[in-house]
Image (cartoon, rainbow, N blue to C red; front, side, top):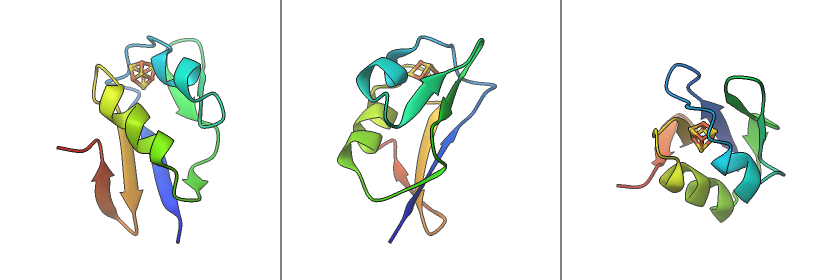
Length: 71
Ligand code: SF4
């Protein structure tokens, strides 16, 4: 099973919070963050990062089903 990570560049405010919390999962570019890898092993930290993104810009999916941010 793999999860997919995506950052919506149009929403990302480049706060750097995700990259600071989980540098193994996200890195900050100039004006937005990007996943280090778009496919990962299931990792609770990815959901935590999605939950904590102030812009709701991080999307975590599993086989096309949205699992993060959590409601
Ligand atoms: S926490 Fe959200 S807004 Fe901040 S850099 Fe990461 S994706 Fe962008």
